[in-house]
Length: 292
Image 1 (cartoon, rainbow, N blue to C red):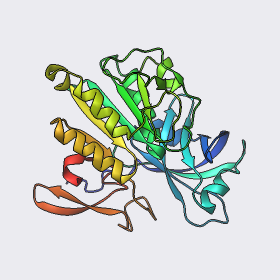
Image 2: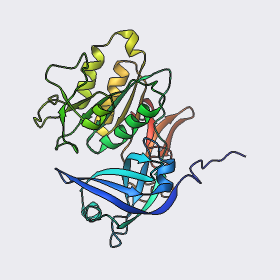
Image 3: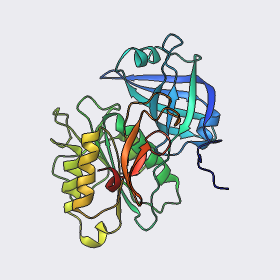
């Protein structure tokens, strides 16, 4: 008998203990929770559903930015938008946060496309960090390139990259230090005039770099993207123009986040025709060509 609910048995409810809460400009925070059950199963692209405060009944879905199965912790990057996340930002080390996770289908890189291009915009940055770390730890067979965009200060202290990337416009040298230290090149884009950033959309920067590559190199590339829907649509357009496979992690409002309410359903093309798929458990990662 086939299992039509493959997520059963893989999602856990646990009381996560706040290990650390770091604040960044733009009302952004990185929350680290001791949550060993979630950490043991977390994969890039999955998310957690967190209770922000006992006084706030609705949980909030947050993408997992990093996870350490051995140490038993998971990290979430979020920006305060509303009272719920404002309450979450007040949590301090030792406090407990109810967590359901990990939820959702992860990114699935294909070995025949070892040159991975990761595009993250705003709160879509966390899955790109998680995927970068996963690629780094997977036998050294991947060659990632990461592009990040933000119109508010990045949730890290940017610096000039130590890694040379041919095909990047002159002066676009700002990077995420964590990725640079891992040996993974990254470049940043913004319309806000931040030093070392490309002045434009992050998808435009990715397009410029892809256009500098020869056909043989491009044939080894697969794109992964997470961010606001207009950015994902643009990323899908870049993939289509260069005839590249692309996986996108969708952002939708969620109530239950475990497939019960179907409030996050989106239209997806399937071999049988158009169908409604739940972003929480059928996604959030989908083939870009099937949703855009």
